[in-house]
Image (cartoon, rainbow, N blue to C red; front, side, top):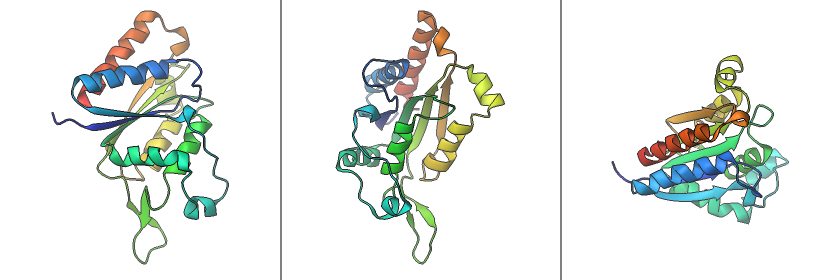
Amino acid sequence: MKAKHILLLQGHPDAAEPHLCHGLAKAYAIGARDAGHEVRWVNVAELDFPLLRSQKDWNEGAVPDGLQPAQDDIRWAEHIVLFFPLWLGDMPAMLKGFLEQVARPGFAFEREAGSTAFTKKGLTGRSARVVVTMGMPALLYRWYFRAHSVKSLERNILGFVGMAPVRETLIGMIGSFKPTDAQQWLEKMQLLGRRAE
């Protein structure tokens, strides 16, 4: 298998102490590096950036200086893995704010000549995986709630800018994990990292 450029986007908003999301990302990185892939990290909680407050700023404003390296890493990557906990049924606000800042016109997509719609995808040629931890059973989230927020991320952000395929890993009931449960998921992440999936 050809070595890939892999970007790990850590979306857990608490950088003060390690959480399962951090352990999962580290396990993925170990597997990827062992297989010869190049790995870069973006820890959203360690970045300082404002939230967007207007469509004009999103369309015409500059990407904050602190996020330019993250855009460079996204441009470099062939495969992107996002890690985050489910908060109030969705990704944490900090991660959403980060994605709004970096996925701007001229980078993530463009208008075709003579068009008013964003029809040219700017990040094609990249695959992605979304890894989400949650307190509820993953099957309940997937089937009863239809995994609505993850599907929205996959369709309306990652897919919209051209990433494909986009796969997901939903990890439920983390509040009642035994050490063996966590270890099984860490091993699965290492395997996914080796495969760059």
